Image (cartoon, rainbow, N blue to C red):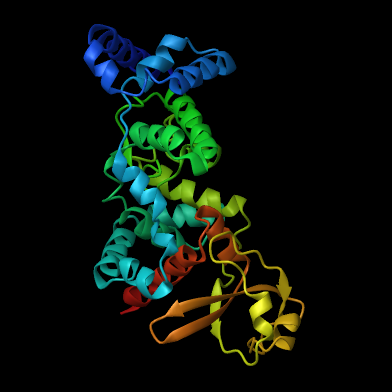
Length: 336
């Protein structure tokens, strides 16, 4: 991290600390007086050699947000495909995707070539995640993560890890951790990376010494592409195809919809189970099978390795299908 962002960060942190120490009532209203939060601050201080008062100053600004718990309890990915699809597959989002592509065509082509990821998928992910950067979430990231870390027992361990990663990310990238807003789960920036993914997969495409997923379109596009490339994306290969089924043998082979869809079956084994895999697909090809509750009944789809890569970005087959179909509609609209 270069000196100037680090200086700005420390000045901001010092000011925040002064406010915390000088306003007892605001501290009392925050989460910092809770024993588990203080213990967390001490652990972070020891583990990363950060002055404990710095960590406490940040956490003193965190607030419990009931809506975050409500959203985490009922995520959109638990909907049926019939209800999930209309959220993301709209004429407006397709039109916005075409416009975004046109504005960033040269940059998008450069990123697609560098990372070997199809450009329509990069655009579609930004479309699903944040409407191409226009809607990045309304909750402060520090509030969302602190709320889930200390008041959402079912996944408290995960979100405490993400809160830790977020505090480290802010130091590394030189921003004030009390300022960014994001999703109810603490995802942030144009591509809605959680903190651990930001630290692991974000890239400085513009070469200015910072990985800025909030304001730099090149960094955002390249980071999405890098994430997919690291998780096995192969340019030009398919994601999914709709198929028909017969009998009941396919049911045992259908993948869960709420986790990465691994290609655990061969085309031959799916055919034997009654799945009408297209004849052009070789018997040894690795595939998966998913069943979605659509408007006209159950839809059956075979999915490929690229579909799996998208479900690593978001562990939902519904999400990956929305990306797949939005990408297709954007491409079709560009051809008109």
